Amino acid sequence: MVKELTVEDIRNILNQMGEKALTASRALALLSPEAKDKCLQQMADAIEGAAEEIKAANQKDLKTGKAKGLSDAMLDRLELTDARIKAMADGLRTVAVLDDPVGRKLSSTVRPNGIRIDKISVPIGVIGIIFESRPNVTVDAAGLCLKAGNAVILRGGSEAINSNLTLAHCLNRAGVIAGLPDGAVQLIPVTDRRAVGQMVKMDQYIDLIIPRGGEGLIRAVVEQSTIPVIKHYKGVCHLYVDADADLDMALRVTENGKCQRPGVCNALETLLINEKIADKFVPPFVEVMRRNKVELRGDSAFCAMVPEAKYATEEDYYTEYIDLIFSVKLVPDTAAAIWHINHYGSHHSDAIITENPENAEMFLRGVDSATVYHNASTRFTDGFEFGMGAEIGISTDKLHARGPMGLEELTSYKYIVYGNGQIRT
Image (cartoon, rainbow, N blue to C red):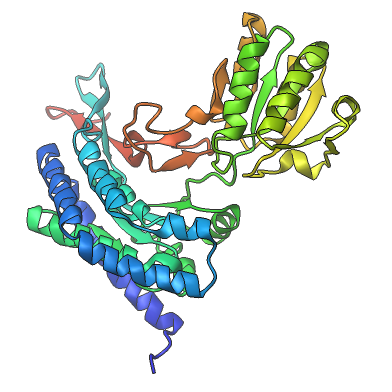
């Protein structure tokens, strides 16, 4: 019979990991860009070379998941095929060839007394990442953190524990052989949920927590953590079709934003239509939504035009459906659209379709979101689409990082001061 871990057991395991990660982070900060890139390339080779070992571990997770009744969609997210293993390896190679974010001179000032003050980008230190479902996050997150000179402690979901442990051991083993300090990549081997509660209080070791998963997980992490957390709770994204919109463009962007992948955080959840063009826009819009089997929920003005629509509740306008369900509201002008978005939105991604430059500028300046669009789909809120090569997540916070987070957002900075004997009088 396996002995159940006590809180003290879990604390001891995580403290040992924290010590290793802290020591590793200090060594990582001194590695050259070339050394880090070599390690990432060799990690990629190791992932491909261990494909059979990884798939065997993954099969254990799939078998357990089926026995627990995981949905087909969840099992698909969990499965690691040869193609997905290759994609993980190629992702590491992509990160390796990106510009190194560490050591950039952000500014330089020479003071009247002759001292020179340089502001230089540096690693954050130790990053803790808490995620669910997809085991590829183990590799993606580790690669980005290492490229930025950070050690990483990963805590994946229990449904992928065998896959994640195998991937993390493979990465750490290959990294050490290539010159990385031991402990640069670690995955918490404990599936007990109490491990998360302990992890988010390890502020003596971990400098930043990044949770990736559902709103419930993220709120629980924020409530418990004594470590700074970068997160987004949900993506309640809006599109406003202005009175001066190109209506054909508005239809294309609306369909793309809502229907291409409704289950992602940058998909549309609410459509705002200027009431002056409702008679022209609503009928073709409804036809497009019917074709895509989208359930419509609207205010009284919209429902009067579309009898099949359900009346939207107040809660609907706050809801991230992650499904083919769409809230709709008619508004009198751009100011009303801005008010609605700032009141009901999640500060993620919001867009306006208009040919009126004044209304566009008003919207872009007035909407308080991480990413705002003029005549383009919110589906572009993504690190790869933004040219970052990859992303660690999307932040709706305002401090340190906002929007898609790439390598630059995994660094901090420090001031380096050069003098020749100056003293303060």
